[in-house]
Image 1 (cartoon, helix red, strand yellow):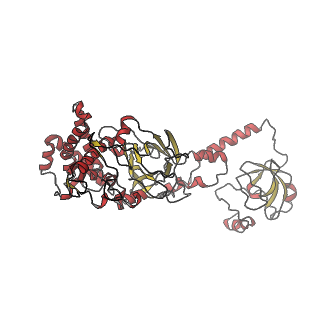
Image 2 (cartoon, rainbow, N blue to C red):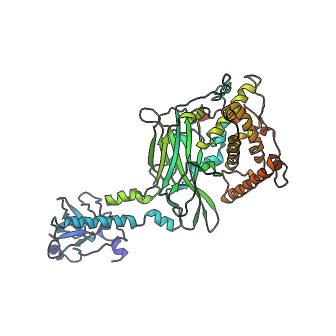
Image 3 (cartoon, rainbow, N blue to C red):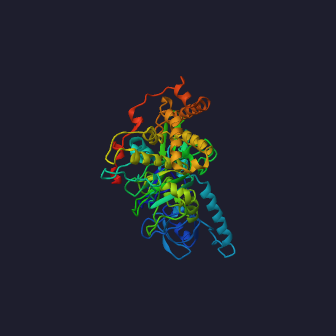
Length: 550
């Protein structure tokens, strides 16, 4: 039987789509031999594969079902009855006779063994059968649920979604005061301000993430996350990176505790703050990976899907401590009903097979918890809306103290809009754009603070003076090294490798010669200082609230 005979058959005209890979076995055809109708009727047949009725009067069945033929027709369709007494038309090409002389033994003693064999064969088929993503991967193409990263594009095109933008002091809607930065003259510190939602979120794992395909090399894996209300992005877009496991690249594991020298972006435990009271407020997670085509060396970043998590329950209260295992949707957040693995969308026929394949779907595991004690107190000093690593909280708290003291106490008056001389405040937000420099500064600050007396570690005002000195001796000088000023948002893996190499060299130079040695070294090229790197302008454009915040 060739392809042309299949196309011209009556079953094709009825809309039956034959799968040429299925072992279709034509044993009887009333059209070829009308006398066979007498011998076929009344016998029991076994289904070779699944069939779902498409027209009224069709009888659906599963592979292995036993059907009794009642009558045959000239168009290749038979009238049959299943074990439950349901009658309808079935395609003869999907059936084979169990025994032409006697009906098969269907006694209760043999049924458990038959069902166990069918169950085991179903499990083997579900585990061994290649999925659509396996075929696509073998061809070197991306899974259909992958897209160009939506959040990566926003970070490249708009600085408003960076962490540095949310650290800049924002004016109120009237422009006559600051939005969330107030000074307490009695305690001589920034006033704490608790918001409705303060939570710690830990990304535990990403499971069963498909690979780009043959001929590609995965360079990095990371997850973007931000606050969202279903319409607008409400916060900065934060990145959490994972270390690539070559032995199991489909399983992403994260670390909540960092080793010495690790990047802060690898810390999976993050804090979130928001004063938004919308019932739809939540967090969007977008797992992404960066890969390189081996043949051309071209690098690209793609999204592996997205997940949305509500932060408020039905009663309007923040979600309590809980661990969630979430299904990853394909496409970008504005797309619906897109699967990362298209084979999981199809009717798989067997409910057991569908259940097994469901465990192979991409999943994101997260844990939400409530900050307590000193950590909760430190979070109250941060901006009303912010997402970041838990390890950055202490540094951001000291920065906010320096900021509040300068813009409220140092100014000549409440109506004064003159430039404020503060290299720390003018450049610290930009430090978050260069994570490797920020991590170097954080490690230096931790080392310096360990060697201080207890009274200094408890005195925020003395800490601020020490914090400023460490910043000027490390991060401020390195920020003006031309070799370290490549934009990390759009850099390639080669540029990132060069940056880390240069950073290690500067760290060694700092240890040998100190900050003055870096500033005077002939091995380092420095960009000239500009006025906006020495002074803080409190009425510049990015100090005014954005349209979404009004």
